[in-house]
Amino acid sequence: MLKLKIVSPEKIMFDGDVESITVPGTLGSFEILTAHAPIISSLEEGTVMYRLPNGTKQEFSICGGFVEVQKNIVSLCVEL
Image (cartoon, one colour):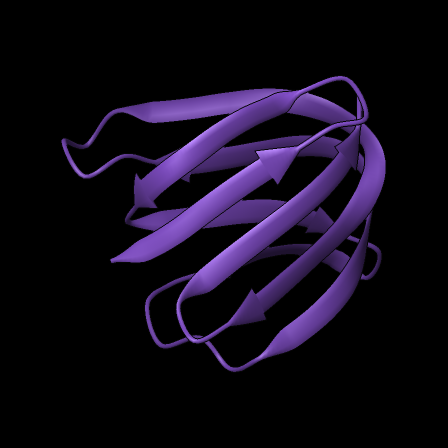
């Protein structure tokens, strides 16, 4: 299980547990799963998708931002 926190300049958009996250990295989209290696990456315009523990998918569009992964904690700072 991953802890995901998504923040924009306006508000905290999500803070909770997820099974996976797909983000639009600068070099292409990539998926983050449990036990992912630590990483910091810039994000470009595209879609962020995450799967909740009950299997529900949530997605929204971003204009850019950053993602940090460390010890099953994923932090996204995004521009909408």
